[in-house]
Length: 121
Image 1 (cartoon, rainbow, N blue to C red):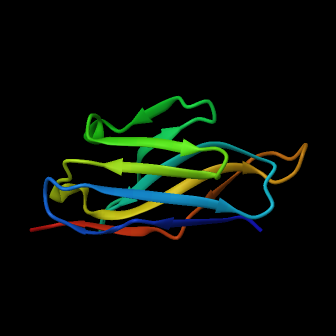
Image 2: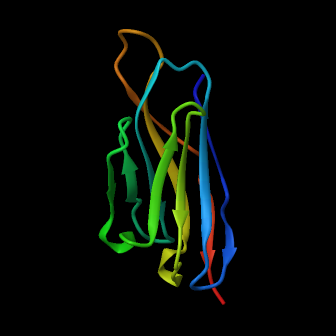
């Protein structure tokens, strides 16, 4: 069974930094794209950043230049370094990975449970 576990959320002042981590465990053949999404109260879940298995990245316009996504393929882990945080970055952050569990099987999307990030003075 595949599990994604996020960590690193918390309360931070505007202008501060946080680093989120998401580790993938379980029976895995291959991990493809890994990404971070966020959902603020009353809003839809939106893409924040995504990284391919080859390291190509893409970011939402609202976080470009402030957030950096990276991954450690040896550890099956994706990171999100968040700098110069703003109040509008407050949300529950979720990681998502496209994973195939066996040779010859199609990839499926798996989600973590979410971690709260609150930016407030």
